[in-house]
Amino acid sequence: MEYKKLFIYCTLLVLFSCAEEIDPVRAFEKGDYASALPIWKLRAEQNDLQAKNFLGIHYLLGLGVNRDFVLARKWYKKAATAGHPDAQRNLGMMYESGHGLPRDFENAYIWLYAAYRQGHPRAAASLQSMVTKLSPNNKILLRKKAREYIMEDVLGADADDF
Image 1 (spheres, helix red, strand yellow):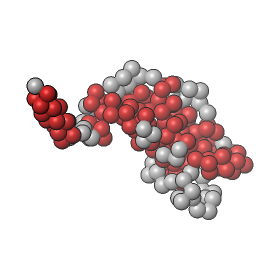
Image 2 (image 1 turned 90 degrees about the vertical axis):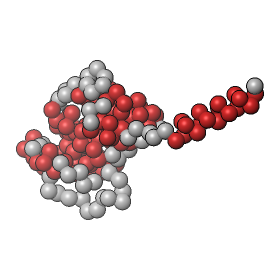
Image 3 (image 1 turned 90 degrees about the horizontal axis):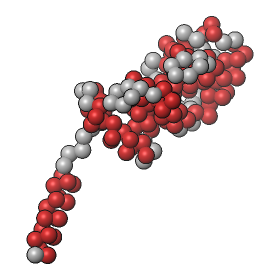
Image 4 (image 1 turned 30 degrees about the vertical axis):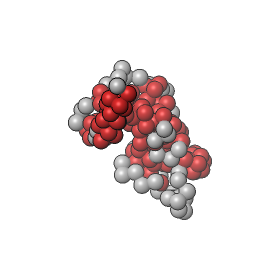
């Protein structure tokens, strides 16, 4: 009897270890938010920055969850402060547009600039829209604040183009 239980346990262990894990990016892209969301939550608890950013997207857009701007900002900020460029841009866009929080062009600039300096492909266009919203001196101060959220190996000379 004991051998039978052991055999069943080992068989189940092999089956579960061989089971293919769902790729949450592919599930998300296919619109299968119910499959992607629990994987993102698990990975976010393990400090995966991409997962934190994707949780922000889920909550911002209400994909598989109730739309919640507070939770979107929370997840974006966790990834953004750790240096994740996508989360930095997403958080900057939230501040610029005022989605779920008061419009704040200074915080928007900080996060968009951090994403831009790390090579985010759409951050430059987002920053360009902010050129007239802040004074040149203010932008210099905000770029200095943004430096703490920019990965050191990416950071070169301070650019003055935005």
